[in-house]
Image (cartoon, rainbow, N blue to C red; front, top):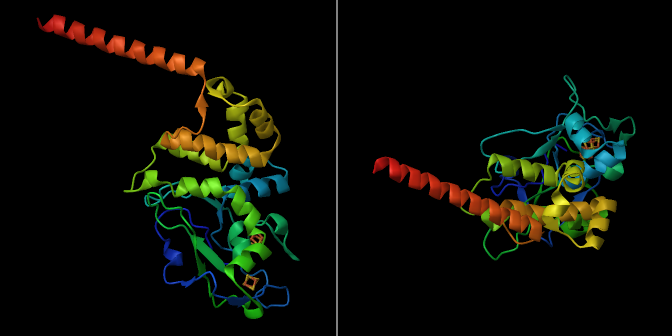
Length: 291
Ligand code: SF4
Ligand code: SF4
């Protein structure tokens, strides 16, 4: 698969432009197997965008924390037209630029393979955010000449293909992620500042760093979480991931998705009062100087 993204930014990416869009009931015929002359050749020199679940599952498969995985296996391209940080799987060095996970028999992380790999030849994009409209992905078919799987095997609808490739369950876990990237807050081209970009990156991709943020800082004194939720997010990566989306909506868009503790509220009120008093004092001293 070449450059097959799960698109996150509102605009349609260049590599999906001109691709055939697939309606829900449209079918395509496709089969990938080791009898094809192209087998494994697509697992090199390819842009694979990783989703939060991809990062988490690959990390766990490799026995790494998400922080270690991102350090060792990911790239974070920065371009001015990207609204949000993205994560690309790092290929090995020249000349082959092979995927680090391709082996003699094929993909060595097959059960945890990224969304883009499992969904190929299908790519998807989220349409631009609109107020009051749930963003539904649109699907495209990659009909690359190098891929000999086209026209092979059975016919698929998008729904059948997603089910066969195990995409449904992963997408359920990532629903909160899609809600964030297509959030109406972004309408009109608004951009997150650097601090919030960083929050987004940690909350979405570096789940183990987010875990440290929750459990190794004053987080649990600043926010009121039910005890049973604390236990769930302590013991389950999936629950922690769902919670990170809940927290991000609060942290990025100021939505009341998480309750600030009374103690933190009182501290914030005192801080605001102290700042107002200091401003007033400054103003009075400036007025005294002038008179
Ligand atoms: S993760 Fe697996 S399927 Fe995807 S490019 Fe690498 S080897 Fe190929
Ligand atoms: S059929 Fe397509 S996806 Fe499968 S190995 Fe060949 S090029 Fe890759």
